[in-house]
Image (cartoon, rainbow, N blue to C red):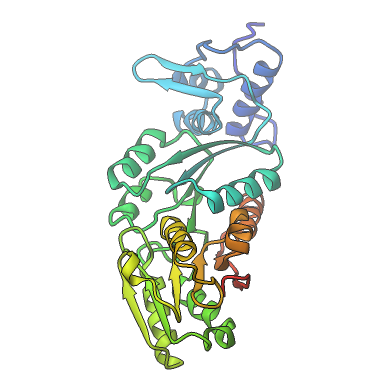
Length: 335
């Protein structure tokens, strides 16, 4: 028997496209197919087994999404990888990589526990890069995990992907809500509830300052902050950036940007301001270093570890839900 022939048993209850997938996987495992080998054409398999071309294409496209095959226009299908031990091949499209996103990523990798091949890409809040990555990787993965951030055309790019293969992470724009499974932050609720948890500590200060540069930062931070200050009668201000003249005794500074955090801590040291007494600091988004900076920085943060773990479980179980990720105030010495 020609070892390159892919055959289908019509009497089997096993779906025909699945038999093609299993046949290719078997032949790769047994060494009949090696990396770079050309597979029988779609027409050849269809004719030999009296199948429709769509059935063969369904099988080949799944193998392509798992990284086993690649297609060369005008030439055919070739073995791309002999690693056939993963049913899942997942693309992670993050906005950026920082300390808390690393915590998310590590929790995801640990929970998925070798069940998937995972590739990570970054769009750096650039609409064109975002669209280019999605367009170029279309059909190459079984699942796409996407952080759309605030990119205005993200929904148009995401709609290029198969609906049942997409998971939305972190920010959930209105244009995508209800369409895709997601694990998201509710930024306005999270900052409001976090500040409310620290209400008694905040009362020792006379003014709350949100350092909000806009841009990539979620609008929910601004909305939740203003609502809290209005509801609890706090004198407040919103500034786009932090300068030395902005740092005054009796103020609490709430900031999403770690560069502003470092600037503030260094300035307080130079001026001999006692952090947590003269000046309060609340940073958004927690990770390990904030436990030790200036004897501990108070944070309002979503649970990035839980986000990564729940994402992995959602993909493994094929659960199609929208989950609001938990968030809390973590009180340390800076407040």
